[in-house]
Image (cartoon, rainbow, N blue to C red; front, top):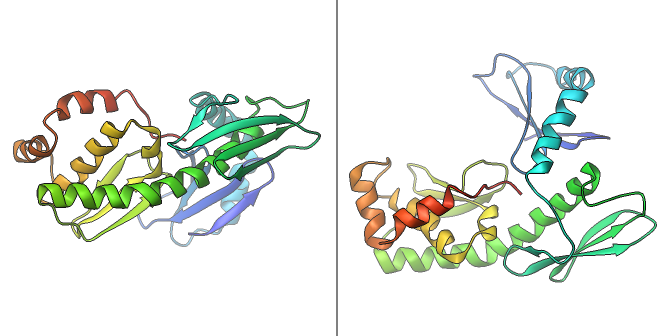
Length: 229
């Protein structure tokens, strides 16, 4: 998908859709902007909308930023941590198992620009963890409970923890690495069950229940979480 860059909002991913009737901008769960527009609409319409809607977009991003609070020393995923160091220039980078924030005196961790830079690096860290852990765990659970799937892929812009299509391709949100291991397993089993039942019928939940007898508790706990990064 095409990407344009804005000095204030960073990268904006563009998606053309035959169902789109107008140009729209929204804030994705990862805090970045997503643009949708009709198939043959010119790209300058997005830039014009950016120019006329900056204040509204700032408010939407601020609301998204408020969902995530970063603190020095906090755990990121399963194996990373956040370290804040004083600096004269702003820089955020992954160094081994640490996400190091070089923070100038005139910036704070609640600054929208700082949050955006941290999020970009957190996405990288969680993607590394997800690719290392989730495929192996998915394969193990499938073998244990007699499921078959074709492939697995990863995302982070979706508001869903996972999905499974009719070709038995399972998509997993890298934000899963924020969850306790038992909730990760619940999501994986949920999507594996969709390889047999492409709905949420009674038969589907029976299939889930065989592999995860505590699925009702796990489902309730998952509803208290959000896949935003």
